[in-house]
Length: 614
Image 1 (cartoon, rainbow, N blue to C red):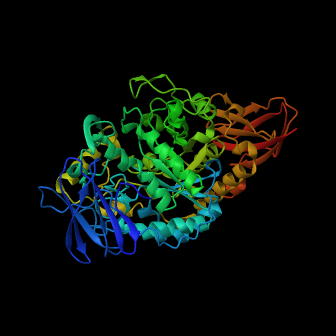
Image 2: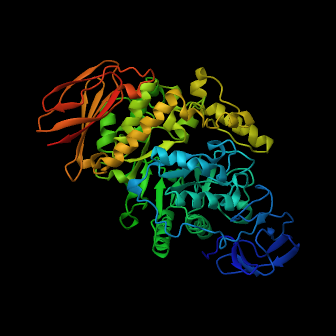
Image 3: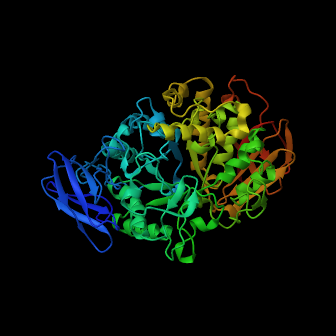
């Protein structure tokens, strides 16, 4: 990949360096190892400085010096920061890694079961390489795609990743560029697709030197992190290059299969060709060059179908978007305390709408926002949404970082999991969810600036001001806060955790085996609310495969009359069956077969799935 963004190692110990500084007249390249030297750079008409340097091996370290300044600055598009955010940048040769995935063509988006993980807490070692031995555990559960939380170089050793400073540099303590490549290579050899979480709406606060080079930020818009990235103000072209070339970098050099783009609603752009259209154009071209699919998934707070519509009709061109509404509608029914966090949710009819439409809030007045919000997504295929019951945000943005396993009982955990895998959306799990991990996922970081440390601590306290009765948030800078979040891999083989792991495996298998559960056609879904607390889902596929799903959230048994249709319903799974019971004692459970017009009594807090044949 040759473009103006960042260094390009050509080969034969020759590297082309590039630096965008349109308002500067002079930029000098300072090589600091293996042999120190200063090399002047030449400026082109677009404000880029270039120079080709010979006798420079991979691993050579360098800085840039801007005119009128004595300070040495790392490269904004650095491929590797071996000494952290304040140190020198290093040359990386992206042509010599021994890839073994030439036959890999990825997995269609419609067929994936996503698994979000954080490199630092997924294993005790907290590295890319340490993930590899755990891949077989994921495969045995039915997971075939991982979504890695952001790995762009951030300050310190530990961070969620959303404070990344060098967007092209995999974090050094995780294993740097070579470590990430080894992980992707291993995943592809085992049939696992790799998605990477990327952040384009802001840059982390510590070590950020972008403003020293050029107008990367604009005061035209304000976002939660300060000035917005400059997509449409003076000198925006270089910033747009910096952002739009980043997906290509991950796709080409790291063989990444897809990107999850963080909070797209905070990247403002009034250009005739938006940044999303520009990215879409470049990714489409690279797809054709590489001959494999490359996917883009958005996190959006817009509740707008425009996110996945094509740019030619004014859309943003994403393949899918996260569906927060599904989580909110489901969680508020599973946990009676959920209404406190999501005041606009909590009715069974909303969960029904989440199944049949997608967006629950689609133009209604929303108390949380104090305005009308959203637009209907009824006509948008389910394959354009990613649904979940937990993710890093939903867990980590609680005072105590509790997972759902500590918020609801075991029966409700099974119910919620079943609801996810019977929904017509791409399912996503948060690491450890599959075996009811109990370790928290707290917010943690490792900045060094005392003022920034204090500001972060105070910011977290203010964020949870309405939840003071739940206690004080953990100190994000205490290393123990981070260590508490490590997964307990031994738990998955023990007691109720092992039962939950088998439950998830069975749900994933059923979804793969039955076309009606695999279908993303929302037109073939009926959701019937049975008061006061049960939802009955009817789904069918093109080949007339049918399933009927009972979701009883009520604290009591609920009776339902099966509609006529000359169908014999056979039970596939029942959460009240003895094999899913922690005491291994059968409780009230549903019959193995049901015929039309039968009255069926569904036990309290239960999910059951039936398949139908005429």
